[in-house]
Image (cartoon, rainbow over all chains, first blue to last red; front, side, top):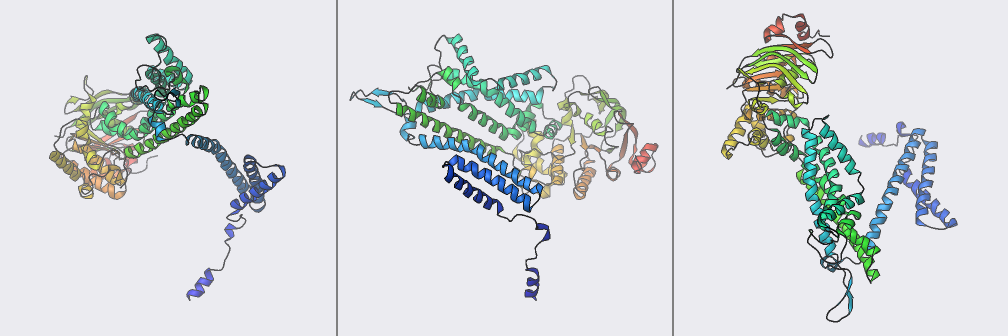
Length: 366
Length: 259
């Protein structure tokens, strides 16, 4: 009985709804086919990796489109073609990123050591005991400088940005002139080239303190000019996402507007706000030009942001190449090391943003 | 502790647009009053003027008087915050605060108004409010869980518990059951019947059976056409409105013959 029903069901009765389709793995086989064809072509005209990838892509697109057109219909053929194009675009977009990361890691990894991140100085100097020229390598001054300058910039930008966003979302009437002005100015600020922000801070501090007024504080001011509009926009976005229902629920309980904002609206949006701020930090931490103008650069350790030139990682990467010390190879290596450290710092910041968002996210689990 | 509400010659505007025209209505303490009428006739708008919630929308304002036990809500120098502490509101869609647990949601009105409350008093208040909202038995073991983890009907009853925890004199309900299934609706309707003993309840509803089941008096609102203001057509005992209305349009509406 069982065997009878099974045998009745088992015979491969082809579902008539699935006829006229390419076999399941046809995409994979076509890619392999395209690859072989491209390799063969390269054998004739000479080999290089980039050409191999491009020819594989082109052959795949042609093959899958014509195969599908023959076996399937026009809609499916076009679907496969466009899917192929989208994947190609994705790989193309990914290529520079992977290549950059690979270059930075492979060139920077060599110099990365405990000594590199725990000592300062990069220039060769004369050892007072042996009177020999020794070159020490270290990025501590740049790490400290980066953290201090970005930290100060965050300290300036977050209160200003968040309060501006609160004003725009919660208080300003949509057609009120001040709101429109603020909106316009934030848009203008978003478009300020970073070098202009650096010039602004440099000239401001020169006017206030006289010539050569390089300081970490000046660089922090330049960075806040760049950071404030980003913070305003991301906080505004997040505050707008808080449903009006919640505000009304709070008002209906007789809660004041101020308490509604601080205890209901901001806690609901805090995950997004924290992510936005972290991403704004990640964006300015890699700025080179404004810091170079406002804080100059130095190889000596300076942990006082109020006076004297300060080094940061991006500036170190720049100067390591542009103004190398006596030991040119060492300077270049240091530049790569600084670049790698910067990438790591940004990765850590992004991870932190994820974790912060996870911790603060409203809990909806049952 | 429940108060009467007297609306006198009230016009409600959104900017220049007159949304509700010339409404006068007297609502007795410890009663349930239902507002019925087609969509857009201004019943929710009128409800929101009763605790000055409508002015949250920019440009909205009123002309006329709303007296709560003789005090004019729109008198000079009246703080809307004070008004809303006495006149609570439950909304169409359940809206528990997502960052708060069930317990914190019930206590929100007290805590956010910066009142000091001892731990035992807070526990008592939570239990009392949730019992009154018929929700205590379902959530007593998970008071620390997020309020948004509850089902829709439970969330709505949580919002009712939150509204009555601040002990308002009047409770306004804006289509509280329109997002709920029949069983949750029944639970909320039972609740309204119990709330009548201690609060003045005003409820907006699209469900005429619901108006007939829960209310003592019913007000029918209608609108002459798009862009025209809503008006109060008839206000009487619920049985009169549904069985023997004075106006033709009321009869058409409650019998389902409305165009």
